[in-house]
Length: 359
Image (cartoon, rainbow, N blue to C red; front, side, top):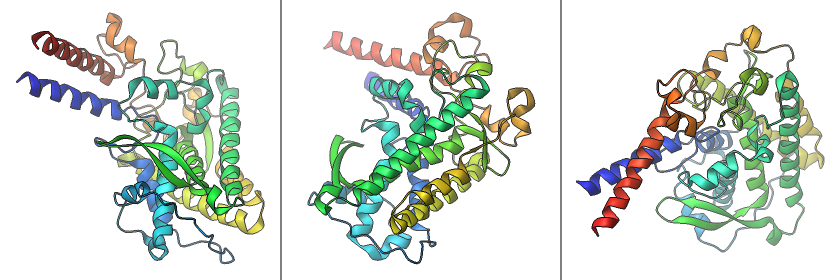
């Protein structure tokens, strides 16, 4: 009975942790995969590649690890079906790239590493979020500018790798495979870095309040201050929303537009290869990352239809929610998962200690 109880606590604990991933949900044994599924759908259904784009030769690494990972990706490769191993490597590299900003090669249950990654002030822009000093309405502009710089720089790195010798285009990265732990896998650098840029693009939909047509950004949300006790929405921006990170239900319309934007980025990147400059990327940035000023909490972000979703399931300070008795009533400022998280953690630790004492 004790063994079953310990297993139950750990499984529920992992499930709760997985729901707190700070971007479109990421893949593990316990979560659905929004970033990966959206990106896979975008590339496999994309039929609007520029006519003058010549397919780029994809060097195939000797390692078998990437092939094993490819076997776990969707069997329907759509537009990549005729590319054989090249298509498989493109898909693996893109998926690992889009996953990398959330996990940095670690399991979603690696608490210490993921918390360090997610609360690093320098690491907010890859997720299109405010950093610590991006306050007030001016903070929207700072966050957008910082996120655009990250996005553009990353696309530029992806394009630069295409000019390297074929053998230099293959790099290795760490990823986490269920039941195996951390593994080092070889990927095609252009698609891997494009995947990182796609992550920021998709998060620009789930971590902002946009106009009704989703073309303009009205407000950038906040994770780094929201998980600490001093968060002030008027100064720091709305707290990161779990509901916005759900690519289904009432957020599906947002996700569908994010998929369309992902396809447009793939095509803009192809155009940049053809023109050998970043002009198509800059045009893409002007189209999808425009800021619409004058929208804030006082006017409900210009009455955006997405505001009710953005206000749901706000991220909160886990420790305060678990140990501060003023939070025991689970007010609207407290994430109810937080208290459960620490109760289950304490239960799991206590059971493990009891088992060691009895051994």
